[in-house]
Length: 146
Image 1 (tube, rainbow, N blue to C red):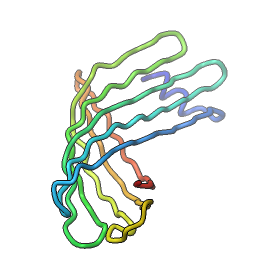
Image 2: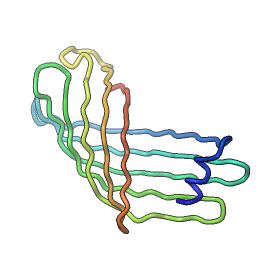
Image 3: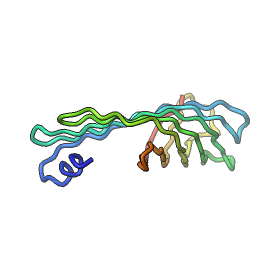
């Protein structure tokens, strides 16, 4: 992580951060659903021939609760994930970890009969990796449900 800190304190570093989340709901009732999904996050950081790249992936399952008739919902999930780091002169692979993911989301047109329903939300994911290290991911997102 020293190389990562060094690159981030430089003046001309380049960085690309991108992610993808996919999930599905299994309906138990209108207010309660089982949530299944996966996340993939990448962080590419480089400057003058030095680089520190990370690929973080996880799988999650939990429950999603709709407290009212609107599209507002909350979720809590168990997470199993891994992160691999690649840097200039070495490859370092971190151990699998398990943790949790909590989220809030608003499903627009939840009570309508449209085929495509937009949503917006946020979540926090914490996955301990061993050796007293943890990955903390905070995510804001927009999506489409079919």
